[in-house]
Length: 338
Image (cartoon, rainbow, N blue to C red; front, side, top):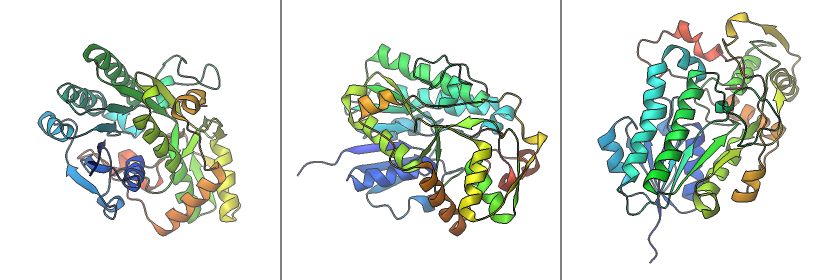
């Protein structure tokens, strides 16, 4: 009998991670979910067959070495992802996003089983678009501590994989959305506010983002894991179209059959904001044989339906971080798309 391949998914109980784990399970992989559950949720993965949850942090070197050992593939989604938190906790963001990634990579050096290390980066490392659509050769000009920590991790993965000759690929997803969201990003924030009233308080409503439904993002990561053509590459993952924040409000209002008004809240404006992100996904289409399947309007409708039945609990991972400083998480949103 053919032995099942094992996939280690760090951050596997989170937003993208839980969808990824679900798809991997359906494909009959044995999945090890490694998550510290600060923002990930057991309930998002508890009914998925053929998985094992190991609670822990990628900052813990000894535990990382233990969970890496049996893995045939590793997909690294573990991160501190919420940009506004990074303004106040820069050291923690580098500890997890950069040093934690290095812990994973160095644990791979001794592995005799590893077929591929898939590192999940972020489109935020590009900063505001200088040219559109944004290809992988676009200059990297991060405009937040979060983005800087992710870019540092990118370079570490690329350099260490060359120095130690192990197979890796770097994936840069643009904005994802959908059910089981774990942070107060722009789309769940707009939905939350419009489910409560006919008005929304936002920051920069002219900023544009490229959104991909979470099931499409997850399928792209699996393609990156399985296809040898992408070894050593950096690949963008996005829909190839963008939408302004104010137009998301209009579309959400239409789906909810409401007439919404937008109020600009200066407190929600970022010190530095990325004005536009638009993905050039030609490389993903060519190397991963991937393309998004869910339209933005259909994905938004499914996200709204999920949020009507489920109340996301956005919990800060930082002890002593007053809710007031996060502007009461249930109503706080960054001015851009993440």
